[in-house]
Amino acid sequence: MFDRDFEWAELTRFAALPGPRAALGVVSGRRRQGKTFLLDALTRASGGFMFTATETTEADALRQFGQALAHHRGQSTPFRFLHWDEAVTELMRSADQGSPTTAVIDEFPFLAKASPALPSIIQRALDPAAQHTNTPVRLLLCGSALSFMGGLLAGNAPLRGRAGLELIVPTLDFRLAAEFWEITDPRTALLTNAIVGGTPAYRREFTQGDAPAGADDFDAWVTRAVLNPARPLFREARYLLAEEPELHDTALYHSVLAAIASGNTARGGIADYLGRKSTDLAHPLSVLQDVGMITHEADAFRRNRSAYRIAEPLVAFYHAVMRPAWGDLERPGRAPAVWRRTQSTFRSKVVGPHFEQVCRQWARWHASPETHGGQVTRVAAGTVNDPAARTSHEVDVAVHGDSGEGREVLLAIGEAKWNDRMGRGHLERLQHIRSLLIDRGIATDTTRLQCYSGAGFTDELHALAENDPHHLQLIGPQRLYHGE
Image (cartoon, rainbow, N blue to C red):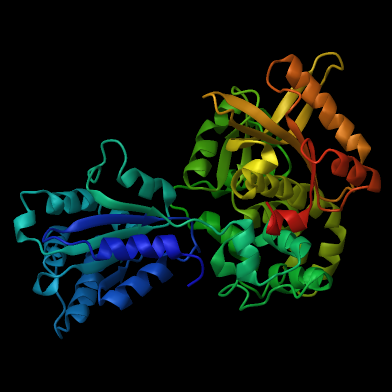
């Protein structure tokens, strides 16, 4: 088990909760994050019961559940449940000798799809009036359909207020992903992360432990592990959409993701890319956000403006690099040629935006308060209007923090360039943007300037940073992965 200490501690705490009554927990998270691995380990360690549902009819699901529960109890004859009331009642009585017993139902959305009343049946079984017949079962419902799992405990849902645990298993962040993939070179780690993100399953099950051996092996690794039609990662991005029960018109959703991957982050730009009206995209964008495929981030300086970004790096890589060349890639042996001709696209459409996102993550979660000159409250990208020049400027990293007086201040602004060696020109651009923000009362002379680069900095910029280390900071891959 790798870096799931918090999740494991919460699961084991819930499984050992004292008391004679049954209790409910909900575990969710995007696919391939290790939820089933955690819950399987929990039931093995505690001698609990685990049932993994499949997409089938209610009658078949009840038959499978009855067989699994009987096997767990050591009975040769399976239970023959006619409806879920009987099955849930029997499950709630399965704790031996009154000691807490873990019961896991994995892929719970499959069961609820075939039996929509199931959440209400579980709710009724957890009601105080029914608890006198229950044993201390610690029931965990698990699923990857984020919109469904999030709705289980929301609003007027039957299970609202019934859960004693609501655990979301996240993806590994960029630093943990590098450690998990055992990649020590920061540039190689970031390039790899731009393709596979922090999904643990892609390291073991999907590549059988094949990781880039170093910078010189990265291109070869992409062609043999990602662009190879015989490897599982090759079609994974397509399957991710197909596995989401909320996504019915997959062609439309793939088109929306392709538009975002091409650099269209505003709804109007996405609509223009698709040749549709902006109002037509409200539903597909909302659904993609609900299932965790995209994020919707507010502008750092203009709250009425926002940007859509793809949440899963492999999906962004697929739409920017693989989908346009899919016919070639399906033919064995064509991957090296495709990879050579898509290098510029990979750098601009995949690595560039991903590097900016990693810089924002570092600024929010890894940089020390001394780096920014205060405690960080939020980090985002933003747009600053320049009326005199009749243009606008993009700020890749805008760090807001607490002034200590109960009001938010702009601690730092930064520019991120993956493939550019940054110099005085980049610094002067940041200084100009800061002056615009000062005029608007958003920044001050103490707002720090930060240059993020994957290709390094000129000697002149190094000298300027050494002379004024508080107000100008240079941040490269080594600091992103190992520094504060």
